[in-house]
Structure formats: structure tokens, C-alpha cells
Length: 407
Image (cartoon, rainbow, N blue to C red; front, top):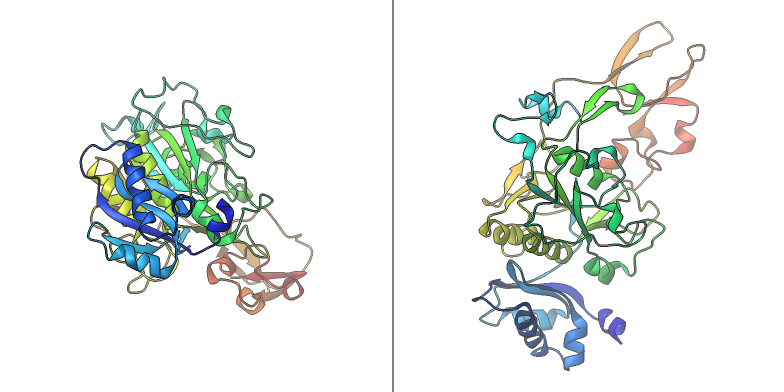
């Protein structure tokens, strides 16, 4: 059966470079099947092993292959490279736009001179999906969807065609490579649809193109005011490519596979996206062309006129911690900001220590608490970027119960 074949081998991306001439999608698919048939035992097995056929921008496909089959394909003259699609990628405030020098318009949000708030620019985001009900994605006052848009609003769990509007004009999801590695998605942890399961995709989409929403604040009432994306009149196309890693804390860490991301980037080109936003970086070592899925997809998108913007990562400061370094990518680094959210701690001797926090809780003034250094209460095996934020299940309940802790 199809499923039995999909359990054999690993997901490889077979990269063939540019499309040669104006071939139909059917012809491209036939070419990819023919290559697979050259290393598979039968036509049925060749077709069943194919996960994605990339047809719009880059020429290539993702398939379940043994190491030997991948090596044989890589030796063919028409193949640029064949590389594993590991889950080696992971996803990485309202004043940010003012801080970097954008001017606030009376009706259109943040307006760099002459840019018209990104009006009718189509921004595609590769991430963990979107929560479409957020006020950041309302379509009040927007005109018709641009005629050049060719994408779809793909339905699924808790998401249907009505989840899209004139702001979120399209949405798709990709998980074939994820499921080939981890098995069928556990839908108690994430929706099998473009709906966001952890908020990262919603955060990045609203940062780049969220509408101006007045009267909002962060946890604890910090930073009250109007929240706006950098291009509030741009349209959004959502490509969900990141999914929870199965395990005891599936909501904490996401993983994104090259094969799924390349399928999304290829579709974004065919859909009519103008700008592609990718806040995803490699989880481990740096990968070189042509084994870097994001760089390969971005190259072919850029050759078709798209601007591809990628995050530099959350690591550092240390040597060799910047990611997404391909010269055809606009790589955006993390920055400092000109404010902090401070809250006092009053010690038993009356000393007051100011520290940074974002929390909705205030301890009763008539009680005292023992303090514990959060690093001394870490649950063994928890990732540093999780414990640094004191996320759920990262600190030992026995060590922090009835105490105040600092990171």
C-alpha cells in the first residue's frame, strides 16, 4: 500500500536546478516519476515514494529514498544534489517600528515615506500558521483581493474558506515530510490545517503586516497603546510548515522540514506572493548550498522577482551564530530596543531591586517569600531557550513552589 512504501527510507530532496524550457506541470511530474523509477523497483513504488514535485520555481522533488538510492540519483548528470530533509529547522512589540524610524500615519499605521503602508503588497509567511480571528487580521476598509493572486484558502481542522478574508487572502499547510519522520500528526497538539497551534506564526504575521489595533497591552498591562505591523495594508498569505515535536512538551518546540518548506516556497511563487517572510533558522550546524533548503527555495523565488526576508536567528553573541546567509536573502538580525519592562523586588532588609519582567501577577504586599535562582531549579534535559523564559514545565515545581524566582 501507499503507507507501507512511505515507511521505507528517509525523505530526500532531489534538486535539479532550473526548469528547462516551458514544460507543463504534468510533464515535470512525469520527469520526476521517471527519475524515481530509475532507482525503484516498480512504477507503483516510484509513484508512492513521491511526496512533493516542485513545479513553479525550482525543479526538483522530495521522495522517500534509501541512502543508496539517493546516492545513485545524485550521480546522474541532471541532478545538482540529493540531500536529506531532516527536521533541522525551527521557528525563532508594538514599539519596534517607531524605534527603527518609521512614521505613524493618522489612518494607515506605520508609514515609511512613499511606501503607503504596504498597500496591496502580498506577503507570504512560512511559519506555524495563523489565528485568523485576531483583530490584527481584520479586513475592514481594504479593497478587493489583488487580481494577480492565484492561491487558495485550504481548509482543515478548525479552519475553512471563511477563515480567509481580504486581509488573510490565502492559507496552506504542509506536513508530508514531518509525518514521514514522526508519523501521523497528533491533532490534540496541533490542528491539521493552517490554524496556529503555538502563536509563533500569528506573532510573525502580525509583526510584518498586522492592522493597527488600538487599546491593547502586553501581559501585566505593559506597553499599552496601538499595536501595528510594519505594513498594515499589505495582504497576507499563510504557509504553515512548522509542527510540534512529539514528546512530553509538544507545545514548546517546533520543527520544520526542508521538503515541506520548499513545497511552500514553490507554491508561494505560483500563488503570486511579492515578499516572502521566513522566521526559521537551522537548529544545529550551518548548511551550505546546495544542501540548504531555505537558500535553494529563496534563490529560485528571487530569480522570479520575489523579495525573500529571513531571520538571522536568536543565538549569540558569539562567532558563527548568524543563520540564513545566502546573498540573495535579506537577512534580518535581532536588535536592542530603547525600553525595558521593569518591576521591583523588595527584600526583607528594605532594599529594592529593579528587574525586567512581563507578568500579569503581583504578589501580596503583606507576605514574604524565599527566593531561588531559576538556574538552580531547572528540570534536567530542558533546552536553555526554554528555561531562560521560565516556560511551563521547565522549572521544578518542588524547588519553586511558594517562592519568588529570578532568571
